[in-house]
Image 1 (spheres, rainbow, N blue to C red):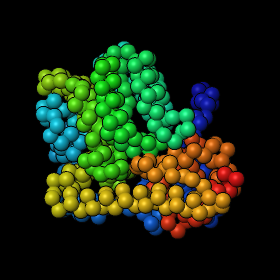
Image 2 (cartoon, protein in one colour):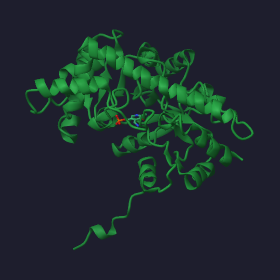
Image 3 (cartoon, rainbow, N blue to C red):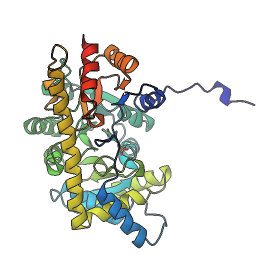
Image 4 (tube, rainbow, N blue to C red):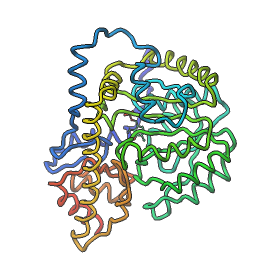
Length: 397
Ligand code: PMP
């Protein structure tokens, strides 16, 4: 019997599908500005020197490939706690579990909300990373959206966001917040706006689920955690999902963490036991290598210092490229004002380009950006900047 003959083909992933099309494109001048991966001036996604050195040490010193505990490597979990939370909260209120990437963290968090806190739904910004609703829905977590972008599609509309939170949410609902480098818009709240968001989250008794995938890519390691700390100062409970994919360049090693903040130590321990039960039934325990690298770097003062320099280089390169794009657009064609990109942070920028213009860029120029107009600034290149801007100017004509 053939039962698989009736299985329909799934649509390609909105973002990774574009990379498949890019790889097949024969245009010698093609540019991939879709998927969120950092690239250096030579177009490569480099391995950080601190990571290479940590790996050398691991080869020499690692003594086993035996399973990690369900919640991962203790030294990694302790370092992530310090990096993300500092000393704002007592450690006995925070359960940190090492997960396969930030995506794994989000999935474990979603399973936790559904199994422990139902009925519950999660409010996400519109727009948000396309995989957010996919991951939450796969876990059976109902999703809703709050407004985030202004009607100009280039600015943050705080009033609209707060209006939706005040008028539509129920006490006990979860709210997804991007701690920094909002994906896909690059538009983050200011410090004052974070205070207002925190006040509303607390008044409406919402449970924050904070996605912190880009620490160090916005304004700096501590600066990027400021919004999260503002939220944590007004609530007793929260979940934070972090990732070492971007800030350690460990994309393929799949290393992240889900951190649960509880009101007290007893509540933390009970929730931690449920998180472990979820992991056990999903993938049993996380892979060791990525977590071991991060721990090796962060436990060593010299490697940590080197990491901070390398992270800062990546951050500054993205800022330079964003500025160069704005400058070059100004002097290209009849001149185009993209200065609204300047306050945007992180790998992504919302360009305001329409779906038709995006299609034209792909078909005529081999330039791949996401249908929403989201550009991966970190995929730009100094040498190709003028030809990129010429193409953008053409589709804007
Ligand atoms: N959250 C956001 C907002 C992201 O952009 C990403 C990566 N694209 C992730 C989480 C997850 O990253 P990873 O699973 O690769 O660590």
